[in-house]
Image 1 (cartoon, rainbow, N blue to C red):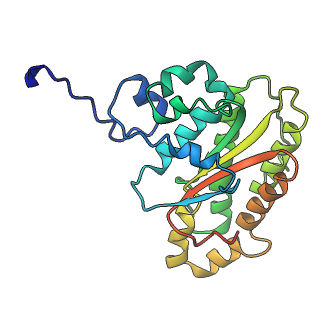
Image 2: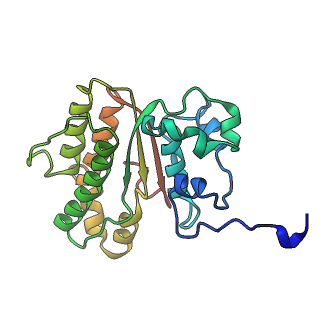
Image 3: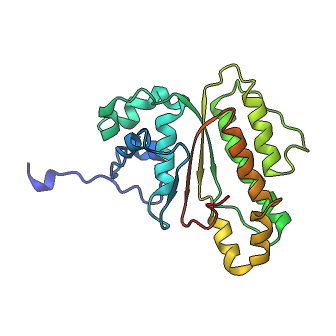
Length: 230
């Protein structure tokens, strides 16, 4: 083949939606083989992936969502054909309901603004879930939406009544993004939200409680272990 006839694949710079650049045929590094490692009996059900910024964590989480979420089942062949994990033919693909959150946009210099920003991020994740599963009935009260922990607990309560209930997989991207900034700028606020009774501590305690009932797996990404004790 003449080198002049070689067609270069487009670089998906700035695009983290795995399924989008796969469908468009953009260049990518196949990291799908890691999914098999996550399926290993030696791998914990609730791993935390810590990597520096710009290491592709968000794209990796999106890949996991495409692989595990039931709503992507009809697109599985299109998204994963010619990848390492596709050749493994794992039975677990597209057998979970995935609830995913991205906390990269959470911000605030006071606790009340932080809570409001965090609740917005939680709401976006739940809204996306409802868009993928229109038959899922979830109408939380204003009181339940006042705190992140109350919001997620009310989701779990509704999910347990969901007729199409399957295994629930919670994926959290950038779990520590805003907290890292607080640690260097406002130590007292950092302590307030992460200590007993703090909204962040309560949120993850609610998820931990959910693992006893409806949460089958979690996958969390961040850049440091500063919140890993939560």
